[in-house]
Amino acid sequence: MISGKWFPQGSDLTEVLSVRQAVFSRGGDDLDRDAQNVLVYMDDTPAATGRLRWKDDAFWLDEVCVLPDLRGKRLGDLTLRLLLFKAQSHFAREVRLRTPSDTLGFFTRLGFRPVSESDGIIECALPGDEIDLDTCKSCKKKDCSRRVTG
Image (cartoon, rainbow, N blue to C red; front, top):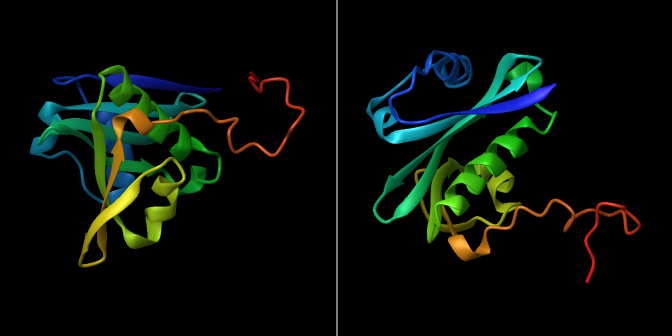
């Protein structure tokens, strides 16, 4: 079973940081105290995480990661969509992130566009009114019962 849990500012981030440590080889930092973190579980085991914070009139996403042995199960996609949903529910005017160039495609699928690049790190932006969490839009099944028409 897959589930998600939000950790608001001031929460115990032990489980979140265990995933971050396993993927990035680093734990918490000063930005955690002002951020909301989401943790995705697979069969009650922490599997993926990401962070959302407010800075310079925009929501910023970072620390998005999935444990290596659980990749390919769309947990990263779910984590990103949860982060975007949270930003959208707070009436985000813009969502931004920085990512290595080799992971850019993961974020552009949901509308992020590159705005600058420095030393292989690409800064991307997504206007809040362009956040689109519709999973059916790119579905190739034309007769899918979940598709909303009209």
